[in-house]
Image 1: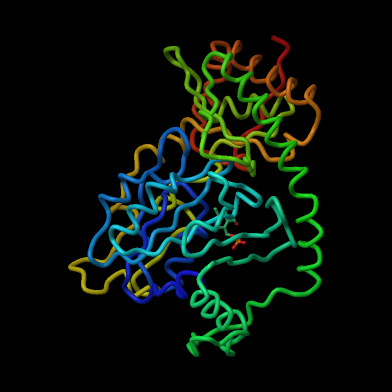
Image 2: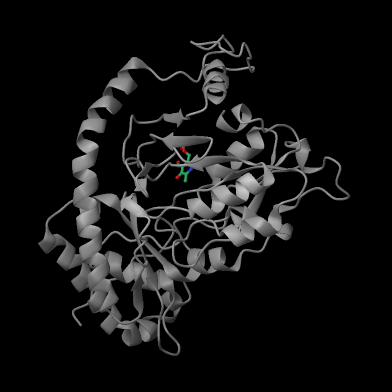
Length: 361
Ligand SMILES: Cc1ncc(COP(=O)(O)O)c(C=O)c1O
């Protein structure tokens, strides 16, 4: 709805990050546009602005950055690029409820910001979401879509878009209002514990915390993400390391997201989405047309994801997480040779991955 309200329509191109949940990209397809995937920054895992620049064509209408897990896209550079080319920016804020970048709230920097209140999120009403915007014209076009095409409350511009019933219920809104009250306190606890865990990880060989992003003035942590960067030959794969952390009682995901253009859940065809073939010699083929090596490395070899609730405990809890990572770090040579079957595990989600035994090293 935000994309349509920003003028995105049939056949337009919208550039987004390859390393995100598939829903970011399917929203673009649903708006009638073609999703174009940019690579990510290796330190934030958010969209790489220079990669976006290379993908801009005369058909490009908008950019959808995702503020991923615990970091923000480089919004100053991205907004400057968007302005230079007259593009709309819709911030996907599904992970950053309550986050601030240089004192500006998540979703307030672009033309619109979208939030998910699905059950895993920092604020949840079971399912649901919200769009925020400072542009009255965008607000009105979102409102008419939410409310079955009816005029918006202000109806200043008298414009409407075909809509549907996307209304939130009062019951859900009440739950979310309550969570707005507790969000600042929980955000502060998570940010404090994230800083402690990052500092500990910095001292552990083979692992790396994401570098601090100075522009973040209030850090939201939807998931705590850190990196596996083995400094030894024949190191075990990232998934085996995630399984070892799991065995230590730290719920760890490795392949949290795949690059969307390679995802098993992202299978758009030109029959279902005719815009993929519009005025092109050959329809867009997501399996063939994109290559985002940094996103590939993050998805299959490097990133480790801990859910937000692991950071809601005490300092001692955080130290236990760090101790588990340290233990696995020390045990890497042993893990590498532990079980050839497990050593070959690669690119699996937490649900698919085989479990391994906790070891007394
Ligand atoms: C980055 C991102 N964007 C979009 C979505 C889609 O949100 P929803 O499931 O509420 O449609 C999600 C999560 O589900 C997400 O993590």
